[in-house]
Image (cartoon, rainbow, N blue to C red; front, side, top):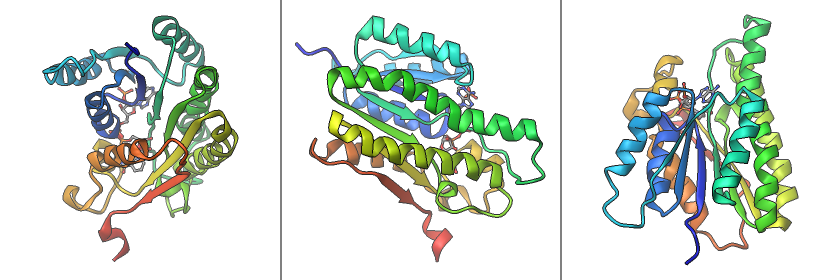
Length: 241
Ligand SMILES: NC(=O)c1ccc[n+]([C@@H]2O[C@H](COP(=O)([O-])OP(=O)(O)OC[C@H]3O[C@@H](n4cnc5c(N)ncnc54)[C@H](OP(=O)(O)O)[C@@H]3O)[C@@H](O)[C@H]2O)c1
């Protein structure tokens, strides 16, 4: 029997990553949950395990990790490779939001770029060779609407998200011939702690829900293997009317 596919979800302790981890595990993937806060990751893993009603759902792997610690990211990928010999799906989602443009300190700017752009790059650098070896894989880079349009008062964050959109598009073109599809997802406000603390002007109900990001991923995964979706831009209806 073919072993279960493996899915790595970063930022899986809450918000979008949590919703994706739960949904992806129900699709038969073994989820590898990554974030810094182990207690929150364990709570998500417990929630997934509580749904282990059939043999189809695989026990999650909890892997506490600061994605800005590049040496540990390399060690993490090596361990997953040793244990499973495959990674089928990556949701490159861990990220931070700090508001501001030129009023952001240089060290905060660096921290935003490090977390939202360099860390996903390092993970891709380590994981793509594993996907190439097997000639297949799906990568979802969670960017932002702020990666398509620079908004006033969030230049630092938007710079990081424009960066991940560019990286994603290059890889989309480079990796298609290797059987690996790369999709950037660019949502407006999503109803998570990040939006609640980040000054969103919409109510929770008016925002995109984390499950809508999961559904977008599920939709792309269901398409025929000879299709690639470069980018999905999603806006809360209230943002455009
Ligand atoms: N919410 C929105 O409106 C919105 C809109 C567009 C795009 N996005 C993007 O969607 C992604 C997820 O956002 P969210 O709304 O779900 O935010 P969230 O609720 O704040 O969750 C962020 C996740 O990232 C993890 N994380 C942050 N820094 C990390 C680090 N250094 N190492 C490992 N994990 C780290 C956090 O876990 P720990 O703190 O435990 O490490 C948490 O699991 C982000 O990339 C964000 O930029 C969000």
